[in-house]
Length: 621
Image (cartoon, rainbow, N blue to C red; front, side, top):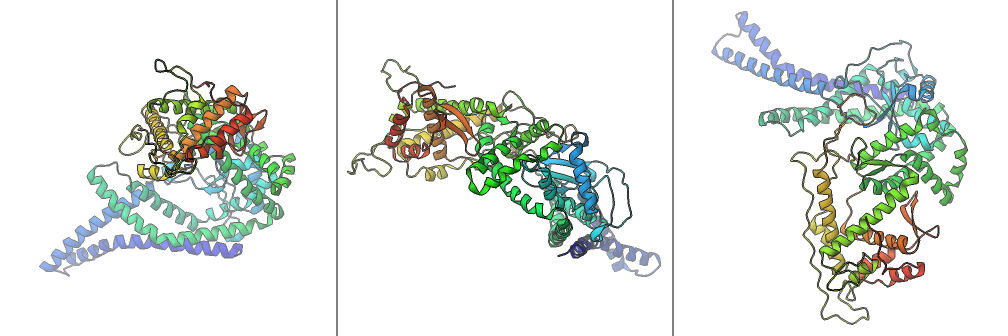
């Protein structure tokens, strides 16, 4: 599909959407037209009689009711605020080179330049219209009647769409690659200047926002009935427009992509490869590195710089990516910013809010952490916190500490206590280690009852609060099948302890400033932050995973305190244990063997090989 064909298809679909709007208006005016005819007939001496009189007032009342309802729907559609993407706004004075590059690109494509530039903590780029009346009055426009390429008028407007750029692109891509990636996105400002397409988009966005407004349950019964009616009408219109709107956007995208073919075509192929690589590294950095820090109240303040380190490490490990390392000698796109560190910090805080649900501002329990501090401030603290929780649960289960006599229980927390407790000769199937059937399988030790976090409110969770998405008890029991009874009891206790800690954190959470980082307007939130995180990275951990993580943390604490090991950061795998400067490997399967079968032999052999003393007390927090 060429530029002209795509533009024509987009315009025709936009007209179809506008025709649906006109038909809805005609249906709303039809009773009024009938009432006018009946009233005019009565005033001129025609259509007289008792039957016509009853019909006249009945139709007039119906017309007023329909007009009132149609006016309410139209008002909600016009004034409802469409959803806006959470972004970090980049002022022109803070990135003049970036704005200059985008304007030069728009001039080369013969389209209006975007009105502003914003960053999103994701690997994507798009145009977003923020000129809805609910977002504030639109700025004055400056028109240029020169026709642009592709059949779209060339209209320079200060109310043009905002260009949203994925922040990882700025740090990983080179300047030329970023220009090539943004070419088809910037080319989409041409269709945005067409009046029919712009009107169709405003109508569809208004319907979508009206559906969201009507779905709000926090109203009185009468308002709920009214909103239900508005919602049904809006959904009906939205379903009628859905197919045409989708085809309109396909035509716009096809026309923009075709128009951008002439801009750095060869470089675009290389740049698209970088998009996929950046997405893979960004996802791994968030799930393996950022998520452990977020869970303990720390947020890495240089996530975008970290993705460069992660992708460089991936290039070193993966032979398919070796050629990409040579690119690092070229100028990175983040050099187009005046203060890359400040922008990276703002994007990193927004990423923590979107993907984890953290507060909007740093505080005592939500502080930033630099990469060089990560091993000590995050990895070491996480391991010791998990190990302390593990021993508290063992205390609650009545498990005596190793070496403690009946009159005292003061021997420090040791790894041997965990190994001895989880060692089970019967195994999950009731078979002894020597293969003989067990006549008296070990009974499971009693576990404290599971106590899920208390909900912060009836309608929505508190801002910045962790969501109570823990699996149901039946799911936990199914997850723990195949483990020893002692492992199951300990896993249930750990999960209950975590639930209580999360509930306590919810109760102590104070009111947050709802304004997102980088967004103008005090106290205004252009996106719904009542149900954070908006884009959760991972499902809640199962009981088996929680138990495995805690035992691994205890092993790492013992290694650090008795064998001179140190905490480390692996850019692709997250927290890691360094023994003699090398990353310790093969720990996970040995821990799983202890959890699932109650066999400590593989783990004890690993500890002996590295010189880790399981019987020595460790330091906890």
